[in-house]
Length: 306
Image (cartoon, rainbow, N blue to C red; front, side, top):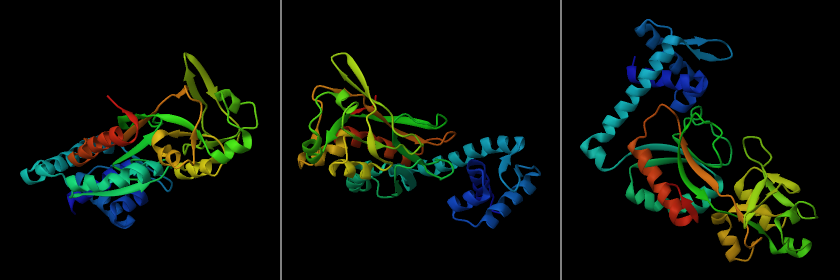
C-alpha cells in the first residue's frame, strides 16, 4: 500500500462523501480508491468510514484522523514548494472556476502575462455561471460575484464590481428611453432577468441618487443563467440589463448598448475568491490570488478590495 495515496484517497472520500466522486477527482478507479481506504483502515486497525448503499459517513475516529491528515498533506506540499528551487518559482496544477464573462473578457486575455511570470503553474479553468461545489468538484478556488452562499468556505474579497444599467438602441427606439428607474416597474418596459445558478430568479436592484433609494424588480419575458447569453440578449434588444461595467465596455464603444439613468448609481457587486476550509493557501494559489487582485484593479473598472 502506498500510504500517501491511501491518505489522499481517504481525504477525498470524506470531502466528496462518495467513493465514486473521489475516484473521479483523483483519476483512479472506484475499486482502487476502495482498496486504498480498506488497506488504510487495516493498517490503523480503525474503522474510518461507515458505508451504506446510499452514502458514506465518517466515523468519530475517521473525523479525528481526517483533521490530522489534512494538515500532514498540506505540510508536505508546503515543504516541497519551500525548497530553494521551488521557492524561486511556484509550480503545479491549479483547478479554478470563474464566471464565463469574466473568463472571456478579462482573465483569459490576460493569462499570457500570468504564464510569463509563472510558467510552471498549470491552470485547469472552468468557465461557467453554474454553482460549483469546491470540495466535491475538487476545485482549488472559485471566483464569484455576489455574497457567498456557502459561509463555510474561506474567502478573499477581490473587488467591488461597479454596475450600470444598459439597453440596446433598437429597444429604446421601440419602447422609448426610460427617464427614471421606476419607469421600469409600471410600463411596457421589460428587463432581461439574470437567473442565479443557486436557483433564485434574480433579485431587486437598488439604485440611488441624492439620498433617494429605489428598488427595481421589473417585468421580464426572458431569464437567463449565463452571463454571456445575458449580455447577448440585451444587445438583441430583448430588455434592459444590469451589468458590471467591464461587461458593457466594448458594446458601449460600438454603440450596441447605451447607458441609462445618468446620475443614478447601483450598489456595487462584491467579487470573491473562495477556497476549501481547513486548507492552507499554497504558494501557487497565493500568487494567483495576488495576480487576480491586480488584474481586477487594472482592467475591470472596479474598486479594489482593502
